[in-house]
Image (cartoon, rainbow, N blue to C red; front, side, top):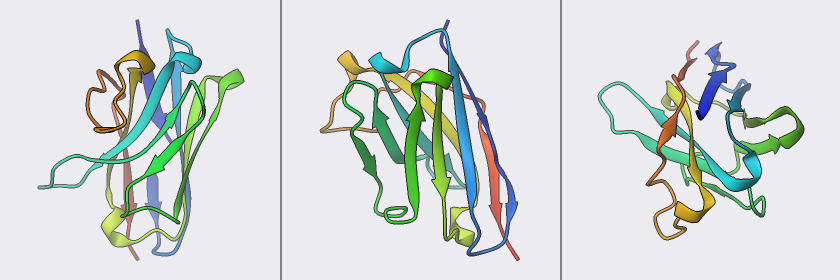
Amino acid sequence: QLQLVESGGGLVQPGGSLRLSCAVSGFTLDYYVIGWFRQAPGQEREGISYISGSDGSTDYADSVKGRFTISRDNAKDTVYLQMNSLKPEDTAIYYCAAVHTRLFRRVAPYRGFGSWGQGTQVTVSS
C-alpha cells in the first residue's frame, strides 16, 4: 500500500523559509513521480512542483519558480520541498502525491496523481 506523510509545515514570517518533507512507504521512489500541491482556502488545488524518479527531472509552477526547490533522498525514501522567500500568498495546505512513471504525462504534469498524503499547513504571516 502506497503511503505518503508530509511534515515540516508551520508558521513563518514573510521572507522566511521552511522545508517540507514527504516520507513515502510501500513503493520505490525510482519508479514514481512525486508532486507537491497546495490548496488555499476558497481556491483550487495547485500543482507547484514535481520530481521524476526515473531521471530526476524537476518542474516548478511560475508562482514558486526561483524560490522553491524540490529534491529527493532515495535512501531515506523522502522527497523535500525547500521553500525560501515565503510570501503571505504561499499560505495553504501542502500535499505530496505520487504517480507511477508509466502513467505520468509531461503534457499534463499535475494530473493523474492517485496517492496522496494528509497535508501539512503552511502559514506565512507577520
